[in-house]
Length: 259
Length: 291
Image (cartoon, rainbow over all chains, first blue to last red; front, side, top):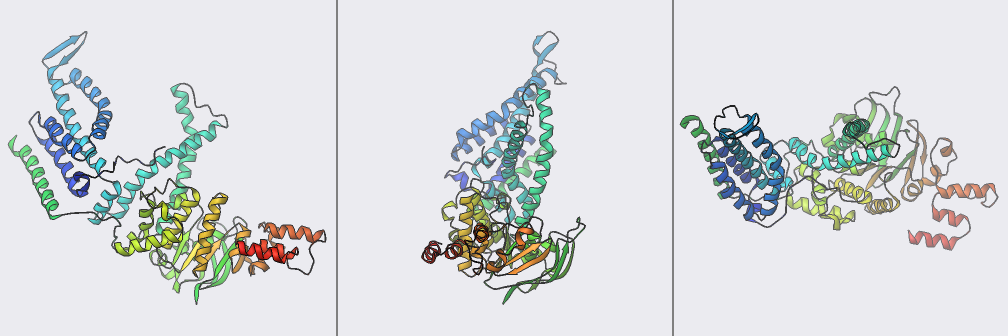
């Protein structure tokens, strides 16, 4: 069982050293530019000439390409099949088979949508591969994100694998008492039902204890929280973030007024 | 100076028909180790929660009487204030891990971050807590990839780092294996040597006999017995009320029935007392030295 659900790969790199907020601003700039631009090839260019080089500068290129591929391949196949066959504005048939025909407009639409999603997902991947979740959260908390919200996000990352482990234990316990969990799909789905009660009620008890534990450590103390991790931030990066903000506004503006 | 004073405390959980604690009065002096024993449901945990301020601030319900934690009246204060005076460690080591930190070192920092302590002081305090709980080598590990005994020591360190005056331990070893239990008690021994004031609920009577300055036995929410470990732990009342007794007491009691333990000798609660009682003064000294 993996211990946590985090993409982070620890390396020494320029991208790793950037302030998390700068990276977050970069991510949103990529996404907004990719989605607001009317130029067909822009998302493709952003991916191959922006995000791929960034991932290699961050020394996580291989993991970046592999994860992107795995995450998006099923979606792309689905997108292309559905849009090329059923895109409502399709008039130019490329090839036909019985009542189905693949339309050029559908393929084009699928490609544009696909590359936009590619930019969105892969830019977040660059952030997550190069930023430790606790660094990201403590930087955002320092800038005013409510502590409770940051806690929910980081604890979810850790608690999901624990819940999986617990579910497996309950299933094993019930199998050892004769519950049939093998067989066809319906049988297996049915076998999940007796899992729900113990898992949910057990988790509620855990939640109360965890609440006591974090209260005992002054979680709700009214003072301003500090952070153990020192997160670098430079004047240059502040300037960079302003620049990204302007880019985002320009991209949105050009979409509204120029098209 | 009294660190904990409880006067005529009666407390009832909101969903319960009868009180969990009835007319409890006790005082805990600075540096004292008070152990609380009793059967399941006797009120040990409730007493611990009260001593740490979680009753009445986390568990609502009806509280009568007065609780002074390090001089602060608990019903007049709030939990954020009270956790600075009393730290609570409870049974389940796993649920005491905050869940929001990825290494042991950061985990221990959690409480200090919440209190807004400056980074330099934080590091000094964490290093001290790590050394005290003997987990300095675990600093970079994930708090979830540890054994129960290690996790419980992380939980202890996370509380000690906040430097409370009173340490409340609610059966800290009940979910641990023998090795984990031993590891945790080593830390508790180190804490007593430093003069920490400790209130501990515990089932393991042999450990209570060894550590406690004073013992309270609870029965159905009331104080059944109070006194030194030697007085309370060998009382014939305990087995009647479903409280375990030390295996040394058990052996001596059987020996007494068979005429092998003199009626004049007080029943033993610890190994050393038992060995001495059976006539091995030198061996008793050896046992003491070993401990």
